[in-house]
Image (cartoon, rainbow, N blue to C red; front, side, top):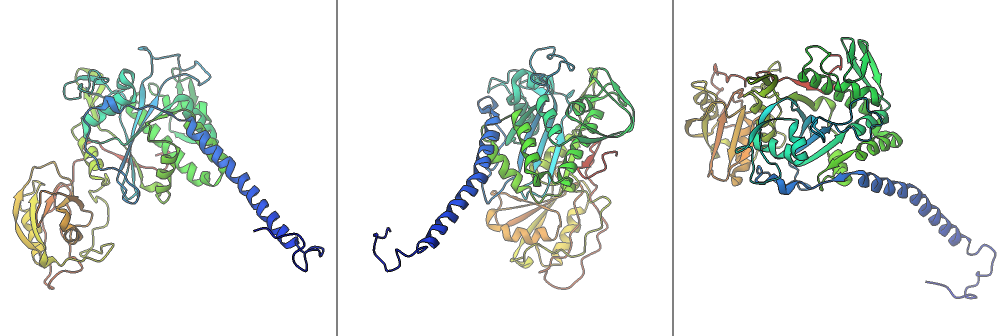
Length: 498
């Protein structure tokens, strides 16, 4: 509200309106200061978001694996397929060739990144480029599937039908739902390394590779973008010359990137962070839903993850019988896909870890007493007597045992506890008896909680709200650990020289 001139005894006094004037000046200064800070941020956001190329491949995917939607406040696991395109466009050199033999690009690097629902773990799965698998004959046809398709080398899927073809093939082979995809080309990789100020690598042999246009003596070295591109592409002249060894070097390289980004405080250096993000988004193609906002949300949800909880694994392979220069997936590859679909760590076998306590300590208090819970125990491990042993340890604590069953051997890893939605609290009490168990809702069940003991299943322990004090019976049987058969994991905090 404005005051009329001449009204008020002090209006004409010198400085009478000065406090109001200074308040207005202060407000103006604050607004300008905020504008100076905010406008570059807004501009940076639109610049980064505008850098990203988006394509919609949903029409070509056909029938897909079922998955629950991701919603704020109720997170679900996320699977992001990252593909490295070998297109040479824009990298400023022809040292690596001008194009592929067939024309177009291949995806020699394929990484499926699984982020757990609790945002405390990430698993990065490398898929060998020379893998021979079933694939849709015509990826542009929704009715062309893996089941009625043809055998094709993995990195040709990208050449045949772009990221949509790679996603369709992966989902059809594994049953894993891919939430998002990202394609990064040579130029983006090179620029991101330069934005980081280089990345340290370690090699135990001298490297001299004519195809990759790259030489490097044994030892630790910090490489710029162009050098790093040559390093991760080296294959034939190092060790046995296989793609699998190149994958190991790439995983060590990615570990080094993670270690460097966290140890040098990249997130606390807006200038370097912006340079990194500008380089990444400038050579990035994604699905329509993975823009700068979605990426920021995912990154924010992972802000507390430790690099020791980021693991790398390679799909286990064996020689492809029809061509010794190609490979095919081993049967044990299903252990990786099953772990992703169940959203559990790959290292559930507890090998080399301290034995679990004889009692459990749930994160929150248990609300249903064992004597109010009916349990059926299924032996899916193939170890005779395991279900009866577990049932006896549950019964002595007050659980009511409805019966026993033998499930299919080889389909279950660890302990899986199935329950109807109305029995979730009861299922938590049962899960407390099996530390590390996986809870799965199953609407086909009634009031009975179904416990499945698979490979590597833990034996029961005492729950905090047990009935009675009689000791648990001696448990002499143990479930054999799940066969790894060539599956090795690498932690992101591991020494890059190992």
